[in-house]
Amino acid sequence: MKPLVLVLNAGSSSLKYQLLEPDSGEVTADGLVERIGEPVSVITHEQGGNKTVEDLHLPDHRAAIGKALELFAAGGIDLERTDLCAVGHRVVHGGRSFYQPTLIDQHVVDEIFRLAPLAPLHNPANLVGIAAARALLPDVPGVAVFDTGFFHGLPDEAALYAIDRQVTEEHALRRYGFHGTSHDYVSHRAAEFLGRPYDEVNQIVAHLGNGASMSAIRHGHPVDTTMGMTPLEGLVMGTRSGDTDPGLVLHLHRIIGLSVDEIDDLLNKRSGLKGLCRENDFRAVTEMIAAGDEHAKQAYDVYIHRLRRYFGAYLIDLGTTDIISFTAGVGENAASVRADSLARLEGFGIEIDAERNAVRGSQPRIISTDASRTTVLVVPTNEELAIAQAAKVVVSGVA
Ligand code: ADP
Image 1 (tube, protein in one colour):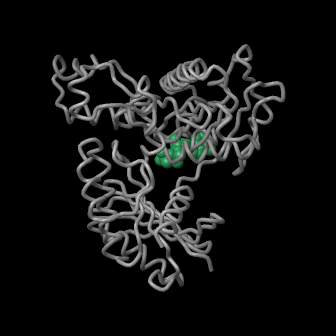
Image 2 (cartoon, protein in one colour):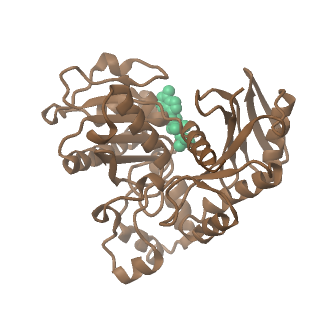
Image 3 (cartoon, helix red, strand yellow):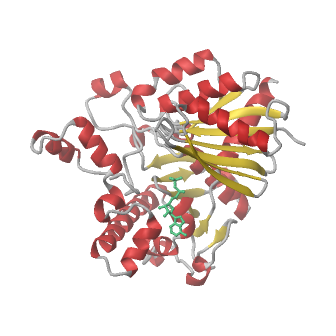
């Protein structure tokens, strides 16, 4: 059997894991642990076609990873005896220091910790996952793959905030971009699918999941993206507002009297689709619209309006766009979002084919007409595979 990679994506109270073979992408097992640290945690594990869901108490990430290893073993995979070449960790913020997938040692751990103020909710959780993996699998090298990495070379005009330079430079405040692993994977997959050289095409990628972001890529180099210093900027998301007037934040504090933590909670957890119509799951929003719910329809319209605003910006920025790709839960599944966000753009050389757009599937596919100058695609993302492949490359280089 070829070597496997264990990919870990540790959130503040959750852990996603996948054990896979990086060349073929074949998944041996995967799972999700939720509510880590609460009285009752839930682990959903899938291996060899069997899915199990178990409620139990998992006090921390180490216990959660330990439980996952137990389930691997129960299904016949003893990780200590398996040819496991790396543990690949999704790390949200690499700041300016890290953009390449990086072999984890104590110095790297210290640096990720130092960057925590830039991603206070994410980096500490990622570090807990790293520590747990190092404790439980001490002989397996760990590799950090940074969500910001793909965007490290954003040109200054897209990366700088127009705020007093002294403040931004002193505190490293700039637009970093996120979901980089997905934008990287999908844009490469799109070019490969169409048989076009990556560095000769202009692309726009719309990653529309619970979190959502868009990127503009000129000849293989990202030139803009919608998320900024934090993953709160840009598109309307499941529970996040995306762009707002910074003055609104001041108003919420100064006039309405909300504390910083309350504003954080409002903009990150009670905004976006959920804020507008009480539901963040796109399928539920679609059902509410079908049932005549006006707030759900408004939420959908705001979501589409913001998408179109950024499509417009990126089409102008790129000048000509060869490929537009939709990916992630909403982008891959919601045909109406794809059709509505690119409607009436025939004058810009973009024309969706209704029949092609209605086709469902797990492979990349074209949804534009043959006459469309820009080829519009659905390209399923696979961040775990991208992390596993990056991790394998790093450990092969040092072996
Ligand atoms: P994340 O990884 O950010 O949690 P996903 O990429 O899994 O998010 O996307 C989750 C979103 O995709 C949810 O809003 C969900 O409702 C939506 N989604 C999943 N399947 C469908 C579908 N068949 N039709 C419409 N939306 C869908």
